[in-house]
Amino acid sequence: MRKLHPAWIVAGVTFLTLIAAAAFRSTTSVMFEPLETEFGWSRSETSLAVTLNLLFYGLTAPFAAVLMERYSVKKVALVALSLIGLGTFLTVFMSELWQLVLYWGVFVGAGTGGLALVFASVVANRWFVSRRGLVTGIFSAAYATGQLVFLPLLANLVTNLGWQWGSLVVAGFVGLVLPIFALLFKNRPSEIGARAYGAADDSDTYSESPRTLAATFSVLFEVARTKQFWVLGATFFVCGWTTNGLIGAHFIPAAHDHGMPATTAAGLLAIVGIFDFVGTILSGWLTDRFDSRVLLVIYYSLRGLALFSVPFVLGPTVEPPLIFFVVFYGLDWIATVPPTIELIRRYFGLAKTGIVWGWVFASHMVGAGIAAAYAGIIRDLQGSYLIAWITAAVLCLLAAGAFWFIRKDVLRQEV
Image (tube, rainbow, N blue to C red; front, side, top):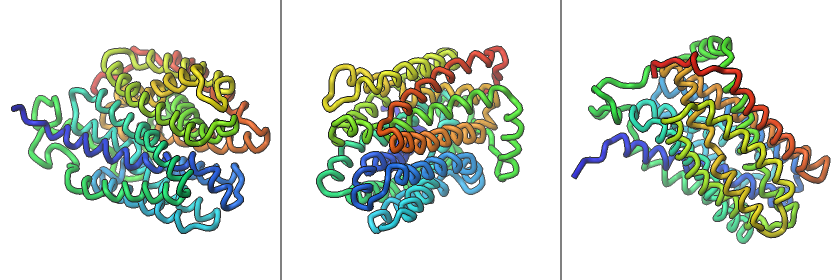
């Protein structure tokens, strides 16, 4: 029997860890209304905690890449998981808004930032030569799908037993993953005398990233002089706006505004998660075979058209047009990640991929954070999310057009 390559064991542990990190993200949208009811907070106030969480999540990512190089991926990931578990658990005992902001925003935000897709990118780069795009797609799907598949369970717990049970389940799951990760995860192939999957020799395939904050900012200042960086950062800002910031945070309360029970809306987001798993892995497969710029034009264009339909398909019951939107949006949810990372590798080289991806990912979560706050304010002022949906749709179409400003013939080939 052919022995399983250790890269796949590390990939499996990474997949599980990303799901644990994503579990918290499932709680926010189902807790808006219970927290507002119990503590008398407004939608803008609860959205503030989510916004801070998303900002910490994104802005931690570039520095997480530095810390992983300096102190090891394993140590940083263990600290990050611990922060997620602690921050989620402490919400059970909160009574003031500042505590929600501290626990959700700072603790869990920093923890999820340490286990953001930068972590996944480093693992894929170190452990895989062959199937790198596919593995990146699987990791991307793990984060988004884990977030969404947890929703039905958490929605039922929150509805039937109270919001505290949602926090306890997430904290407990993180506690279970911690020892598994500590036991099975390895930083790089050379630690166990192995080679990366598909590598021709025993040398590490991953070039070291900067180990200091100064070097991290130096990379930022260098790539910020290129058109490619600004296109990738701006379009991924839109990706964050239209996924974590809008749909992820506000779909359930928006559906509830149309008379739909929270548990039903959570089930629909779980379907998004299932199809996201398929769509993101398929996107990784396509990224290995087709021009990433063309894929991104298609993804953002279709996402924009789908968002225009949201105000017309939401209602008290689940009808075929809404099912079509959910399935399509699932396929497109984070399909943008594999081709975006591939463009970063090709434009800036493998050695800078982790840091550049960290900054691009930061723009994703800044977009998500602004969208979460913007949608909450729009809801409080207008009584509906209509303007929020239209704004997101227009941004997607602008993002699709942005890729025509970068040419294929300037791609670097040392990948």
